[in-house]
Image 1 (cartoon, helix red, strand yellow):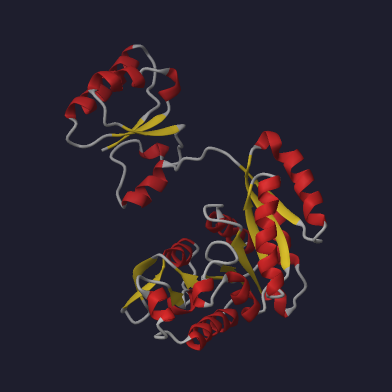
Image 2: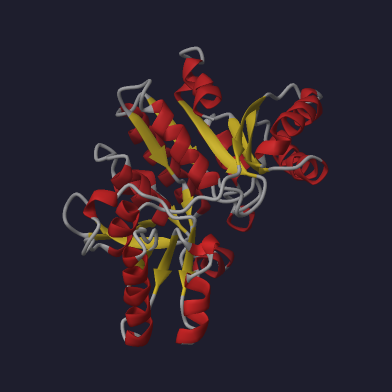
Length: 318
């Protein structure tokens, strides 16, 4: 995906090339994850890359430049902190937040539609001035936000941006979903710059790519890339960040990954049966701190491995 997607960075230096709008064909297609890949790749080609989510739905409280609390979209916080986008202002990155009651207030006439758009345009303009390229992430598919007049296709049109669509792997149903979103883009005269297909099984990669490219050819839209589907689990270092804690042991294995993660809430006998099975030898076990019987069982299992001259490959989170 990095090689194919980075072609975006080679576009002519026109106004349309300054940013790209990313939307999905439906929920849970991996849009935000794909945006992470895009931003990571673009940062190797441009000195400053910015990120914006014009319309947010799930907020988090952060401290703004003045130390005041601000409600921003959770993805905005992720991108700003992970990619160190400290030159981007939170209010510009997350100009409109659809918090509880917002839709009803909009329908009751208590929210000014023009102010919504003005806030988005102001934020985008401010971010354009301090970045060389912008990734603008939409919320869900192209029609999300229609009830408040801020669906993704319309927002992209107001910002003068082309669209990149993220879809799930498949052919027939995938193209059907793309068609619905293509119609929304067509309604607002938004060009689809390309499609990225996510979670493609490696064994089906070549065939899926071949036939989706043929289907997209009728729109003259390229398939930018395909992201293979692999079972992925976080490293121990990732878990340290997640829990804001430090490993008690095994610091030399912070970059290690496990084959599976198992939450244990069974009896000791059931747990011991499972922990001895070969398919669970590289498993991260999550135990409640009060289950001293399970903890003792793990310790005894480790000692058995040592006595036999082996090494237990599992991990433990209390």
